Amino acid sequence: MRLKFSLLSLSQAKLVQCINGNYLALLLVTLLSSANGIAAEKSSAAEQKKQESRDAWVASDKIGELYLAQCGVCHGKQLEGKAIGPALINVDLIHGETLSLLMANISSGFAGSGMPAWNDTLTKNQIKALAVYILEKRSANSLDATLGLGTPPEIPTTVQKTAQHDYTLRQVYHGLEHPYSIAPLKDGRVLITEKAIGLSLISADGESKLLIQETPKVFDDGTLRGATYTGSGWMHDVELHPQYSDNGWIYLSHGHRCNHCNALSRQTKKSVVMVQLIRGRLKGDRWVDEEIIWRAEPDAYIEGIEVGMGARITFDDSGYVYLTLGNMIANYAGAQDLNKPYGKTLRLHDDGRIPTDNPFINNKNALPSIWTLGHRNPQGISFDKKQRVLWQSEHGPRGGDEANVLLPGRNYGWPLVSLGLDYDGAPIHYDKQLGIVFDPNDLEPTKIDWTPSLGVSSIAFYQAKNTSDFGHEKMNKGYFFKWNNDLLVATLASNDLLRISTKKTEPTNAEVIVKDIGRIRDVEPGWDGQIYLLLEHSTGSAIVAMQQADKQTKAKNDVN
Image (cartoon, rainbow, N blue to C red; front, side, top):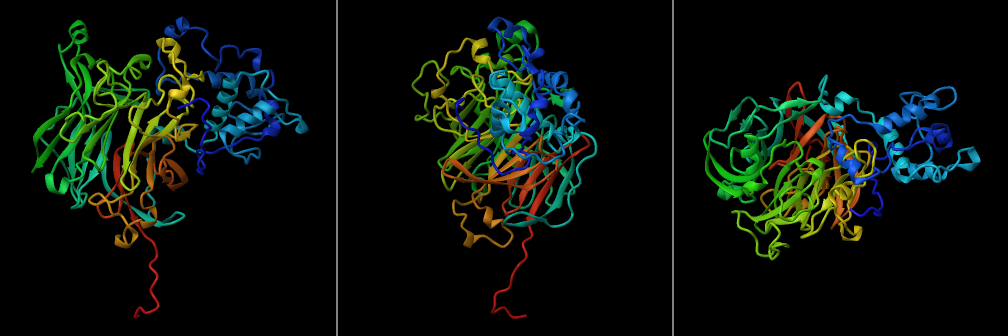
């Protein structure tokens, strides 16, 4: 992602928000009297090393402190407005509807309405930090909805409308615990992974859940850190081989723990972990024929948690399997190191062999399985079979959620740059801390930036599973045929499902097709055209299916 890359805002209410520029002067009055060091550059690499790396569950909010100290007197502590300043939430705002326009309003001001320009008073990052903070507060979601706490969202029982299709929702199964991934089967059953339970099979009628025996061991010794369940040794993604109907192969990613297997483990006398990719088949309720597709070298195993590992799996149409790996290391060390698997996308033959045309195959200092590098927390990956393009979704820090097109050997920038901010409002700065010198022009630009964050999760192209031909004329009436080849994007924080149209490597249109449904951990098209959503909530998670409900019009020659 190049820092100079322009922000791409798509037509989504929770992604595109604004502020009334006429009153920004009131919001920023006396801003710099105590703003030094808040949402600004860290002073030195030495000072940075004193900072514990910030995580999503750490509520360090220097921007909020800045707002309360300098802006609350005019606009209220909760942006609700006061006598001398208007509300900045729950009102229509008139000067622009994107983050970039909001930043321009703060920077340039509106002389005709008495608002001065602040570009000589505030740093660019302080302007961006305040803009992000206001947009975050304008989000309609409560904190409980964002985190999956409190009362679970209600599943609508009426027909829901979108620009191109109507649909209904039905609950397939309820009562899951910390689920991560689903894989619908052709006969209506659904494979499901739960992090600390393992792999299970939901019956077609949704009445039962069968735990599959003899899968890799998972561990239930995780803990809650804030509102986030953390741990290691988990079951992660499940994905069917493209020729599953013929070969029966099922692929799993999981956290493989070991003891005394490397110097760190021997020194600490604790277990260490790394994501592993395997495949196997089902025989009744048993996992059989297991094969290891990819396992890291022992030195890559670390202490830590797997919340940010991604561990998503997809296939292209040429027999290759891809695995995403996030960055578990403190301060994100390793994502730029070609000899470490952290923050990488791997590409392998479906049986685990290393492709001879991988981009770093001839680099003796690189892992030969690496396809791309510089990733933070890759939550989704999907291959567009029609246009033959590989897409990936990725959590940013505070803002900077991304959709990327993965090209061989390319660097996607983490932790050197981000279009988002760090959790305390500071710009991303880890290049200095890690001693990395880089040219921004060597980094691959982000295709879609979501700032503020929507908590992007899994992605999937709406395409047939058993054929490359997904033409309108061959689809039955139950399919969402107007969504052919569109990218479905699940979100956690914003509780929505997006549909994005693409042309080759560029997004062309976006629509929210499911709103306020809860945290969507995974999205998968079914074999019959339905769309399956995996919803997670602290009171019990669920699988929900979207079914097309367009009104059928009769042809003129139809007989009544």
